Length: 112
Length: 113
Image (cartoon, rainbow over all chains, first blue to last red):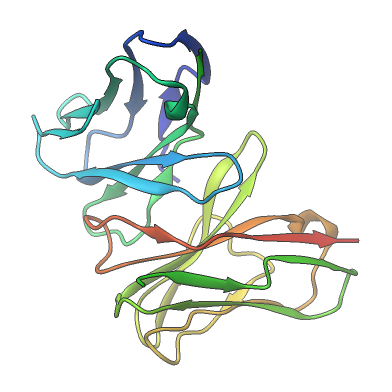
């Protein structure tokens, strides 16, 4: 089992603050890194899939970067809103493997 | 509408009574997968399928079976359920494995008494 670690486990931010969290994954044998947003009582929704070192993806106020050489990805949320409250999951896929390994997630609460 | 459909959404049953959770996708995806979600453990992959008649074990396959006889369907079978299989289960599909986003079903909450 490949270890995918996310930090912090949870965080609370004020509305309007910008925030970021980290996903660490094995740097060897990399194929793809996924980010998902998971709201309570719903199912996870894909945000980004990144495959190349140095990749940056953006969707509205949310963006992500990827460093495959050192094995980490950052997710940034600019100007957090209460509707951004959710658990953010990352998942790693290795080259030659059909498995997808998820981290335990970062639970974000945005306080109005 | 593109979707992954799981049934049932909720089930309470007893130890040893065989059950099947169905999963169907209408997006012509090749890759399908089952996950379970437990507090503090995150999403863990049970089984996955790369295409029809091609399946493989994920990280936690013990006590589960799957089949992929048609591209759209990927049922999860619990031959003899036990209380430690009480969990929230998700089916997901993607066009291919690895570098394509997963589309998740709405989840099935199973309670094994």
